Structure formats: structure tokens, C-alpha cells
Image 1 (cartoon, rainbow, N blue to C red):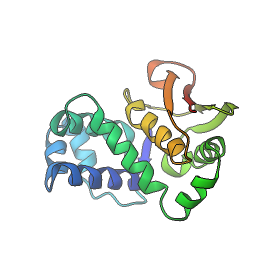
Image 2: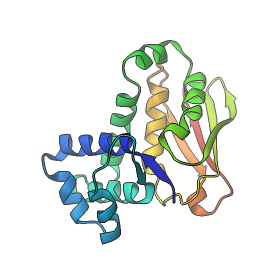
Image 3: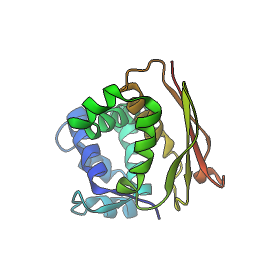
Image 4: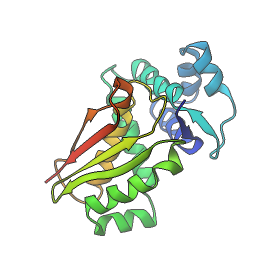
Amino acid sequence: MAAVRGTAWLTLTEFITRQAGPGAVEKVIAGLAPADAAVLSKKILPISWVEYGAYTRFLLQADQMFGQGDYALIRESAVYHARKDMNGIYRMFIRIATPNYVLGKAAQIWRQVMDSGTLTVHQQSPHGVELMLRDFTGVPLHHELDQLPFFEEVARMTGVKNVHCTHPKCLARGDDHGLYALTWE
């Protein structure tokens, strides 16, 4: 099964607590299936690995409980995560780099956050990039609800406008690779 680094989980729980208040994380966990609740109730350290399916189902449950059920809370969480991850020296660097360069570097650090898979730049142009994901086993359905706005926000942080990301190919839907297609002005 695919797993995400504990730092991602800690950033997510920080966001949910800020949005919905103390005890919100525990309320979401209590609403999950017992297997997911067991995974997410354990002490998770920044260096831990968290089962990505449980992480994604937590996001979906949080959106139902504290959002409008329209995935806006998941998008807000991804933007929060991107801004937190790309803070400090990275933020200054991002402002002077092109979105193609920054997204190419983001692809290179994929394995620091995810336990499997290879994310590479498949194609690029002055107003877009395609990122290809291979060898990422156990990808949960709806994972793109978190990943698309993250990639969009990273591109937006370079100063480009009208960023849009789609996910035309998906490992969770049975394609042989995942594809993220970003465009901007």
C-alpha cells in the first residue's frame, strides 16, 4: 500500500484543528472505518509513514464533517500544505524561478514525501507541464482531490496566473501511469 510521510499527516491535522477547532481530528477519526481509525490513532512522528488510503479517507470524512461536502476543504488543505512546505528559503527561490523548473524539482522530491512511485516531467511548454507518475502501488481513489490543488498552488507561487491542473490518467482508475497536466498564463 502507498504511504505518505508523517510530516504530511501532521500538517493536515494542524490544518483541520485550525479550521474546526480542538478535538476535530479525533471526531473525524471516530467517523472512519475501524481499520483507518486504528492507523490514524497511533502516535505519528514526522519520520513515520502513514497509509495513504487512510490519509485520503480522513480528508474525505473531514470535508463531509467540517466542509460543505464539495471538496473545498480538501482544496484549502492542499493550498495550506503547499504554502507550509514551500516556506522560508524555498519561497524566495520559488518567486524567481519558472513554474516548469519548480514543478520539475517538486517531482524530484516526490520520494521524500511518498514511499513509492516516480514522478517525472513528461512534457513541458512555456505555459504548461505534464507530470507522469509511475510505480505508485495502492493509490487510493480520490487522491487527486489533494494533489491537484497542491500542484496548482506551487505553480501559483511562482507568480503565474490562471493555473489549472487536470488528472487525465490515474493509477487508481486502472491506467498504467498517472498524469497531471498543469497549464497557466
